[in-house]
Amino acid sequence: MKVLITNIKELVQVRNKGENLVAGNAMKALPTIKNAYLLIDNDRIANYGIMNECSNITYDQIIDVSGKLVLPTWCDSHSHIVYAGNREQEFVDRINGLSYEEIANRGGGILNSAKMLELTDEDELFNQSIKRVKEVIKMGTGILEIKSGYGLSLESELKMLRVIKRIKTAVPIMIKATFLGAHALPFNFKNKRTAYIDHIINDMLPLIHRENLADFIDVFCEKGYFNLEDTARLLIAGKEYGLLPKIHVNQFNAFGGVALAVKHGALSVDHLEELNAADINALKGSKTIPVALPSCSFFLGIPYTPARSLMDAGLPLALATDYNPGSTPSGNMNFVVSTACIKMKMTPEEAINAATINGAYAMGCAQDYGSISIGKKANLIITKNIPSYNYLPYAFGENHIEQVLINGRIFN
Ligand SMILES: [Zn+2]
Image (tube, rainbow, N blue to C red; front, side, top):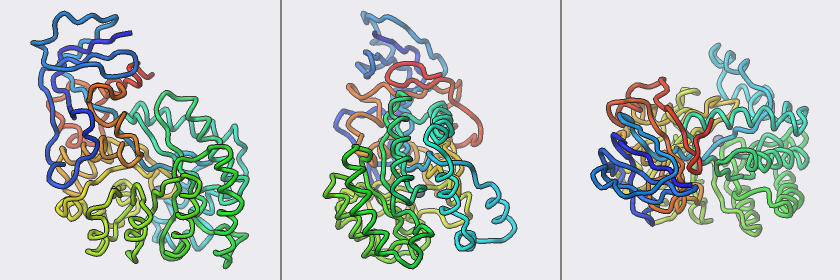
């Protein structure tokens, strides 16, 4: 099955195969082809070029997209999209003056989600979650990482990871699973942090490995949650089961978590709202990519990740949603890109690079996703009639997507 897309006003994020990460100053450039065509062969990009050269091409189906842009689908490398219920009451509590930490101390926050998840059976959890996954695909997400971490018990963590596995087979996009057993300390391990980490390492990890339920391991490395020593133990244990680290770090405090993650070969360090010079130095020359989550900053009213400092230091940056019921009840990558431009002073080029190719890198999938490159998966956004790609972040809050193609097929 060959699909030919013609009269593309601008084909965005065109890269040679093998170009799988953009860092520092290079993020300012977003390669495009104006008045272009693109040929899909089954599920992959087979060719592209300027319309003048679009002749003698055989195809089974043609899509004329005059006036519209085509770009790779968004790559959302950080989400907690599998959860039970919602936490809109805490949203109201926060409006009325309580902080994230105060709500957590009252038994709200992550532990509230854990309680609801425990009471929700696997089918119901799947039904609630798949609905959200389909919604984000329609908003242009073509590869998605999903974390566990609202289980906090062997049974519930396995339930979450099994739901993620079911989602993998229920939608055509690539899903990557991350085990986040160390998201918070459950009630029954109060003041017994070390015992909980022992439980994760000795009881949870072997079963997760046996059922092949996770690709990555994550830890909420933060004051009041898990410290550097806990984090190191978990990352080492995860690696023994082949799970690369992707960790939550520097959301509220900077205390050496970034350097620790780099030392343990983390694929990504996520959040980084609080960042110091030592953190930036630790990232230089490493393969670890920083990931910013601007919708979380927007929702909580906390500082934004200092994107300019990271990029000015020559580092790459990825953008992701952090979709979760507590601090970011939104999986809209279009909003993330807008917010990065508006609040983090990223240019549209930088933000689109961060939300596509660098997001794919942050999931270890850039060889197949994140750019318009021959041989990569044909996961594409076809926009509505818009003047330029700058319009995407500029006219925020509007849906500029007309169609999403996943593996070369229109997703409805
Ligand atoms: Zn998160």
